[in-house]
Image (tube, rainbow, N blue to C red; front, top):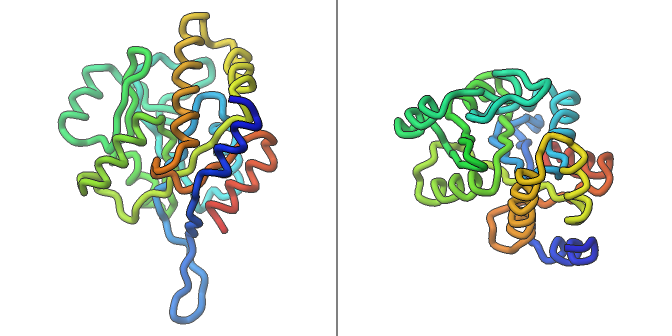
Length: 225
């Protein structure tokens, strides 16, 4: 998908403005914690933008730490970047209904537990969930059926790279994948990009990360108003 095609797809995607403040009867402006789902293909820049949000607004937003069965990458910290667990552990807790969403990619499990979300909410912060397309679809399906115990309803934000060519460049530049895993991740990213820019996917806001500062300001406007 070229930059022009990406722009046309984005222009055709309807989004709804959703704020995180309400006015009390006394006219005071108050922040209301609300789950925020940030999704987008690998290489879209989710981690970079979210780190800036957490640094600028540490009292308003907190990261909901996901679980995974994959091995930690260099520099990743257990309990901070992910909860690194065994397959047996996550499968058992998913079966027990302790996870709001879960998915598999490249032979590994990923998922978000209710406990991880509550750890953020209990500190009066909005939990930000970084989950993939499969997990988002699962969560949206559970919300539609009334199975997911989340109130208020999450805000869904999709982050997109400026083009597939740029996406491939970013993924290859990480140096963390072999040729086979890079091809698999790129194919998955292309599918996720096509889904994120389609209509009727339940996404509230789409942000194209062509310039990190511009994208960050757009994300702030979505989350803060």
